[in-house]
Image (cartoon, rainbow, N blue to C red; front, side, top):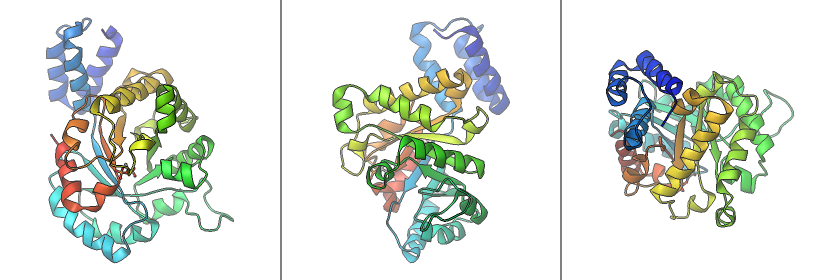
Length: 300
Ligand code: PEP
């Protein structure tokens, strides 16, 4: 059962943003007493409804500008009635095209990385300030491919996250374990540590511009998906880390995605989990019908 103050927070938050949800919450919890164990599931589901699910495509190093335009023209009509937030994170060279193609639509545009300095002698790098001035809204930090192939560490991920926030971007912060670490039984500790380091110095107010993507490295681009139970378990553990670092209100409000071979077939089950608020999608984001099917799954 959740403590009274925590339930009260839920209701107050809900009332601020969504009076229907607040009303339902009161109905579920009666006079705001402790929640009987049998109703906990309902409460979790209600909390989920108060959060915005986000489906974000991570195009990685795919699509030239002309290919990007063609793909976005295909995606646009398919997701125009989405009941979740829709984002495409594209290679730097596609950003102008993507911003132009998505103008006036419900699709947000993000970059796949940013440097931590505003400017300077960092050949080949792009700063968050540059992205912001272009009109980019999102940036991914800490993707496992950056950590694995390009030497990103928890500390540089923290610096990139800081830079993204300072520039006014929403940061999609990726965390996740290697298969060896899962087999060692240290997933929860590892993901908690990655999350805590990356969020060092991030205020509760700034946390509203953080989306966390739980991406088990063994599931990225491999066709191996975490089971919905595994995905939900770790997303719930991350939410607990947020509650410990900030408070329950922050934990209930933060969007935590799952990423790792999510596709048109498995999306329904994954995004229906109470602690999974959408997904970060690699391969399936490059096919308009598949991406749209995932958006549809997260819109339910
Ligand atoms: C990703 O790149 O973040 C990702 C989840 O890739 P995929 O969906 O291809 O596993």
